[in-house]
View (tube, rainbow, N blue to C red):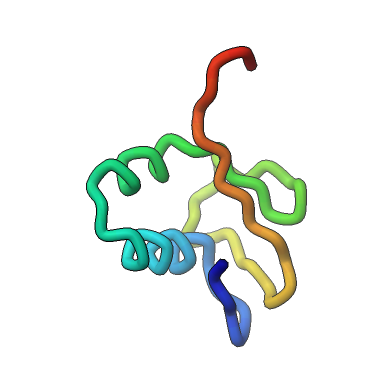
Length: 67
């Protein structure tokens, strides 16, 4: 879980997640994840332009079979 003390961008949150998991495999999977902010798909948006407010839920959904 990542805690934000104020509004932050999705790009900043992704960087925090990468820093917590010093693994090339994790970084590779993170790039391919579908991303939801409060159940709203944002994966096709520029992460630097997606603002996340404290209390919002961000989900990273890795690719999986079975659609």
